[in-house]
Amino acid sequence: MNQTVQLLKALAEPTRLRIVALCRTGGDLAVSEFVRILGQSQPRVSRHLKLLTEAGALARIPEGSWVFYRIDDTGPVAGILTALIDSIPADDITFQRDRERLAAVKRERAEAADAFFSANAREWGKIRSMHVDQKEVNACLERLVGDKPAGAFLDIGTGTGDMLTLFADRIERGEGVDQSRDMLAVARATLEQEGLNHCRVRQGDLYSLPYENGEFDTVLIHQVLHYVDDVTGAIAEATRVLAPGGRLLIADFAPHEVEDLRKTYQHRRLGFADFEFDATFTEAGLHLDQIEHLSGDPLTVVVWSAHKPGINVRRSVGE
Ligand SMILES: C[S@@+](CC[C@H](N)C(=O)[O-])C[C@H]1O[C@@H](n2cnc3c(N)ncnc32)[C@H](O)[C@@H]1O
Image (cartoon, rainbow, N blue to C red; front, top):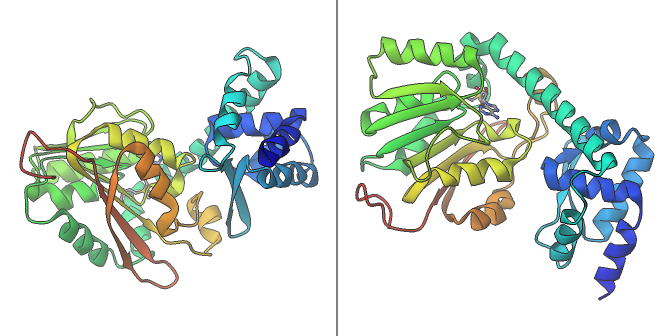
């Protein structure tokens, strides 16, 4: 009961109610983003965030010089909190304005990332090799996929399509989806050059993939999640298009402190801890099978392999 009272006290203030409502729609948000949306000073916003964290409403995720906040949906007051937020009328003018400002902040961020990929589409292979030895990562992914046919394969955030070419010889059909036209132009040229007629790419957003439920046997998200602001939403959407018995592979960085990647390469997140996807996988209905670490200095790559329980009716992959 104490915790419920503490939560209700924390929420009984307009700015704090606005903050939790923003987190409910906005995924992980950084302090500087709250400052812009709410139009209040950083010390003030930080005080509100501290109170909300202490009351169990928000989870605090420190990362280098940034701190992200999200709804603490694992805590004891999570149910009451989400019910309260959901009871706010959709047409409330203050919350509506906050949502508009949040959308503008996200749009700006997406445009900056898109401009980066447009400017660097042809150089992407070179940029990537600065991170870690890609051959090692490819070998790990191939090992995890195994020798069995990988069926229908989806590469989310395919960029220049390198992962499609890597798996082309063991898949029945390959699809790559990406929001950057320039990256896709390079991918198309490569697929054509290599005669990979069973693979194609299309423009789309990873939060609303242009595919049917359960369409793919293997789904890969390779070096994409550190750009996105709603990792949970991205994984849920990837799971939607995965067939029962199908496999989801995620490759990204382990937590690191190379702050410059934010400025120079538009990274939003400085890597992910092993446990970070635990609750998300469970919620999405996935079963985590394996985590592999490929140590590098200063960047270690981690590969998470999970599957969607059930029998794959198309082929003998899965349980
Ligand atoms: C670092 S690149 C990785 C490309 C590729 N997976 C690889 O490893 O070679 C990240 C890619 O994610 C794409 N991306 C970022 N946010 C996206 C979104 N919301 N929807 C679709 N693609 C997105 C970018 O356009 C970019 O091509």
